[in-house]
Image (cartoon, rainbow over all chains, first blue to last red; front, side, top):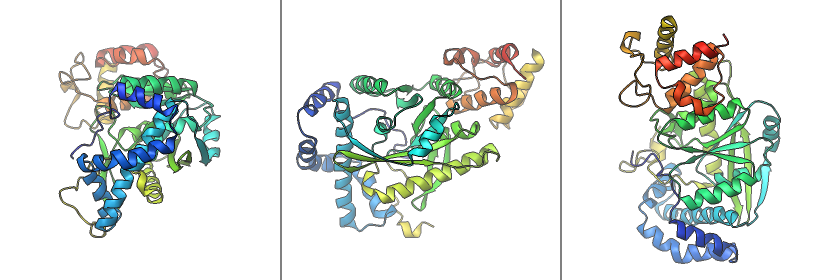
Length: 304
Length: 86
């Protein structure tokens, strides 16, 4: 696979991030969106090699024609730039509107003494999920250790106000002990389940958009090994200043064997992920050869 | 203690599907992580944390002690002997 694991850092250097936050305190969001879409994105589209993976996603996983796939790829880049700008806008103190669907599932689990797991994916704007949920118990988000200092500092400052802690994932195993103790304290562990976790190469093969791909085993094992409740949380951008949060319980048979629990959980996760991406096709941000088929494009219709 | 060490080795082999290994192949004092010892990764450690809770009623509440506890089979056995609830 070309690049299964994200390098763990937001594009740009600390200086750029600081100025972006300062700029977002005074410049309207829409102005930033248009500036990026008209001035920066055409250049990015040409020079960024990741466009081929997104193009392949639209062309062959969603069965779009060549022109439509090209246009969707450009719009995908623009949409991604908007959610990155939104992330920094929150660091700059901007407010967004959140509409929450399925909040009752979150409240039910958050008022119980046991901990639970929140799974998300690299779609929409998963990082700001915590801002929308009034945390009745502490949320501990797994974040990549290699992230820029400016992002970590801004994130840490905003997260602490929202009762959100961070568990940095490095190359060691320390974060595993953090996860275990967090859950035993009855808190929430939040993580994206569509990227490799830490130094483990263990994966689960699932079918997504009609073709087999691999997901990391860790997020599913964390929940399934101890029969912990799981919520899938998707935060999708619906308007310039509005997000819709979808909270869905991922059910599985807690009396089944551990392998079966893990299988059921990953199946429900992929079903939910596919459903949400089909609903918001521009907000799929896995910029690598997710199906390992870039060099051997296989049309969706012929993959079964 | 020796019996507990063998039991732990056997449980680790089963839990991590190390079918081509026997308890004699596992060095009691070798590091669990890294290439010099068993070479376990983060997901393996997670499985062992669950094993401790399921088989011995031990919940790892302090992450700081985790690395010391999981240093080798011997340190793991010492921790289990001291903290086991079943």
